[in-house]
Image (cartoon, rainbow, N blue to C red):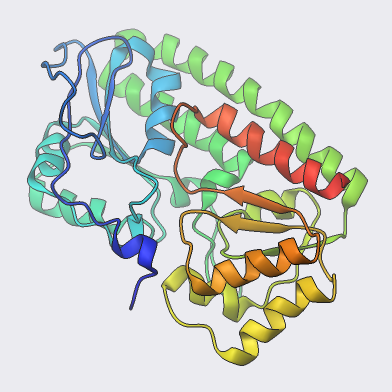
Length: 311
C-alpha cells in the first residue's frame, strides 16, 4: 500500500546500532554513527526493543544491568514498513530478551527472529495486554497508550530480566513496582478528564491515542474509514474527507488529537479545518520525542488533552 510522504522518507536502512557500555546504556538505529562505540559489559543483559518506547521501559526496570538496543527511535521511521539491516540482526542474535509490540505493528522483529536463530525470551506487548479485535472491527495495536497494559508489560519485563540474571531478580521486581507506581498519576489524570468531560466528542487522525481517549471517557467521532485509511497510507474518498472536515466546521468535536508522525495532505486539511474553527489540536507521536522518557511523554500527552478540553 502507498505510504504517506513522511513515512516513505522514513525507511532508513543504513543506520548504525551502537552497543554502548555504561549505566542502563541504550542504542538505536536512528543514530548518525558519530557516537563513540564500545562493547557492553559482559555482566549486562543485552535487550532488543522494537521501538524506544519499550526500550525506555526496559531501562527503567533494568537500570545498570541492561544494555538496550532500540531498533526504531527516529520519529520519521515507520514500524509498519521498517526493513531491518545486518546490524539490527547482529544485535538481535546476541539478545537475551526481546520486547516487541506485536499485533502486526512491528513484524520486522518476527522476520529477524526467524533468520537469526535467536533463543531470546520474547515479550509481545499485545499478547501481554490480552486485547483482541472487536467483533467486525480491527485490533488497535497501539497498546503503549493503555496504562493498565503498560503495568503488565513492566511485570513481564521484570520477570524476563530476572530469568536472565537471577541474582538481580529482586531488584528488577522492585524497579517494576516503582515504575508502576508512577503510572498511577496518569490514570488519575484520565479519571479526572472523564469526570470533567466524559461523553464529549473528539476527532483523531489515526487510532494511535484511542486507548487514552477511551480511558478519559471521550467519544471518537471521526469516521473509521478516515482514520483507518490514514493509518494504512491509503487515500480517503472525497465523501469521507468531507464528513471528517464537517466535524470541525460544524463544531461537532472539542479537540483534534493529531498523530504528528503521519502528516499528509488529508491530515493537514483536517488540522487546518480544526484550527480555522478554533478547535484545539493535541499532537501525539508513536515514539518517544527526543529528551523524553515514557512517563514524562505520557504525562505531557494527558495534560495536553485535558488542557484542550478545558478551553
